[in-house]
Amino acid sequence: ARRLRATHDVTVFESGRGPGGRMSTRRSDGYQWDHGAQYFSPKTDAFSVAVSEWVEQGWCDAWAGEHCVWSSEGGVSPDPKAAAALRY
Image (cartoon, rainbow, N blue to C red; front, side, top):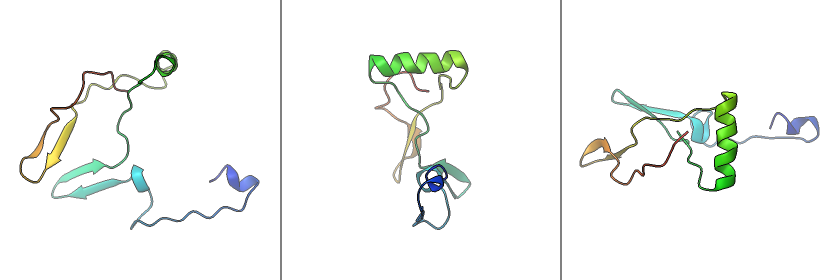
């Protein structure tokens, strides 16, 4: 939006209670979590090459965090579907 306003009239609409949208953080009962993408995994060779270059430049790094899921029955637990794919 900031880049576009140099050449266009821009209006940003936010439907949430506060700014951030998918990048905002939610908090409840002592927990906090982000709704946006916490990591990304390259799925193509071309993207893998690009990410390798980003790592070399120090722009990103591999993420070794545990991927978890939440359910009303079990609370927070490790995601059994989480692949061993590299995450950044």
